[in-house]
Amino acid sequence: QVELVESGGGLVQPGGSLRLSCVVSGIIFRFNAMGWYRQAPGKERELVAHITSGVTTNYADSVKGRFTITRDNAKRTVYLQMNSLKPEDTAVYYCNTHEYWGQGTQVTVSS
Image (tube, rainbow, N blue to C red; front, side, top):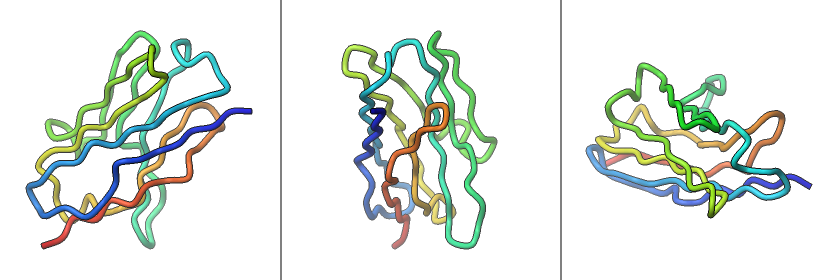
């Protein structure tokens, strides 16, 4: 069975940084594209960043230049480095591949 487990969320002040991790099992990780999504209260889930198996990346305009998605195929893990965080980045962040989702990790940006 496919399992995605996120970690690394928390409370951070504006301008701070966090790194999210998502460990994947049950699929051949290196062959699969991965994505990070987020959902803020009262809003729809949105794509934040995406990385292909060939390591091509793309980002939502709202996070370009601040967030970086990377992957470590040996560890079956995808990361989201988030810098210069803003209050509007507050959301539950989810890891995704195909139809599979993690349980989410809460990121709160507040002073």
